[in-house]
Length: 144
Image (cartoon, rainbow, N blue to C red):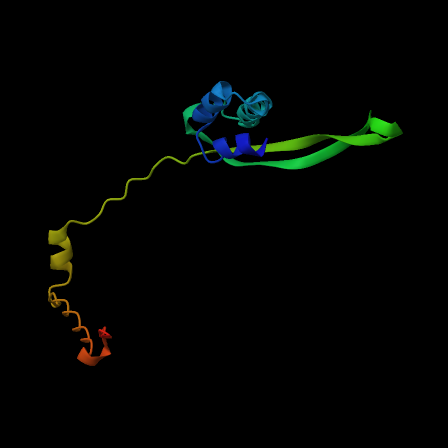
């Protein structure tokens, strides 16, 4: 289940629905139902009416362990093996992306006129690197 939920975390709602719909894993069907329920709940909660689903995204999604049903399976020589049928709790939180705000940056001419007393200072050259010593290299000697 966590493998499927990791696929949709942080993605847009429409993209997440298409990922879950075409995923071959059985857990994807259950996660798709939970995501559709979350979208419906978000739309019903909003007083303004319908929400543009293109702006919705999966804010958080996680899976926690649920109750474990313990069953017994017969085993050889009169023994019994315990089977643990696990379940889980899926939590998906969706949110609406804010509209992008466009900031107007001042042009370079206005910035230069704003500070007439300051001049551009050239960057300093990097310091020269230290040279290696000549005697530090090992020399191979021939034995005859």
